[in-house]
Image: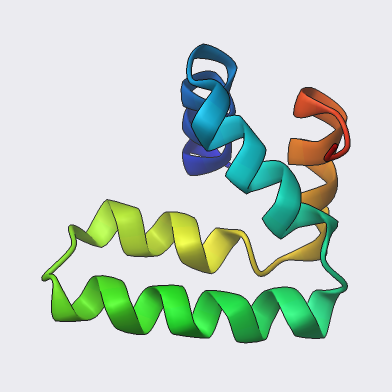
Length: 76
């Protein structure tokens, strides 16, 4: 959950990140997972840090998505 708290803290300081997280977390689980597959594949081509990929993996979990929406509010 350390990654989740870090994502929330960053999003609370940066509205553009908050907006993206809200949109991702609002997706239905299967759609969110498919979208994150594409994000992770792109990040791997950029040799993204392990922590970044761990955050993307965490976003696949429904409980993580709910926690983020609870903290940041719904999209829109």
